[in-house]
Every structure is written in structure tokens, then in C-alpha cells.
Length: 83
Image (cartoon, rainbow, N blue to C red; front, side):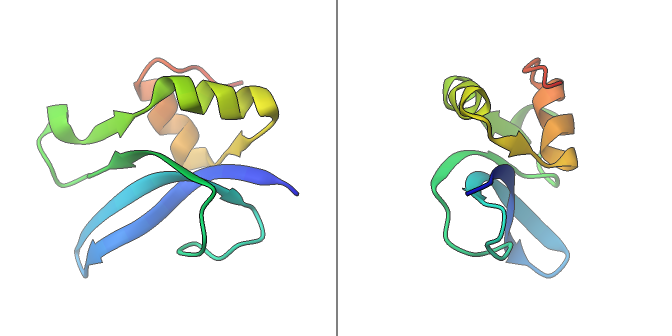
């Protein structure tokens, strides 16, 4: 099973917010997750846009989970550097 760290969309039309989740790469975008490790709310104030459980993300990365491009950018923004 290939595991990815990616975004799961919530919210209404033109007012999205996302949960950062660990899930099987073959699952649909809004499908069943293994674990939720944070959230991203792009409309909120800059300080409140992003919240990530860094210890859980690092643990999943050590286990071999691969982040999506967008999540990789968000992790780098939180100083969790991904290769």
C-alpha cells in the first residue's frame, strides 16, 4: 500500500478549507483517511491559516509516506523540510 500525505477538501463553493491527511494513494480525494495531521484554511488570517502536528508528520515521513506537491510546499512553510 502506497501512503500519501495530501489535502482533503471541505467547505462550500468558493470558501474551501482543507484537512491535511494521511491516506492510501488509490483512495479518492474525499475518501477514507488513515489519520488527520493538520488543517489548511487559505481564506483565514495569515497566522491562522495552517496548523500541522509536526511530530506525526515526521513519523509518517519516516515510515515512507510521500507528500503531495501542495502539502510539501505547506510543510516547508512550517519549517518541516521534505526532500
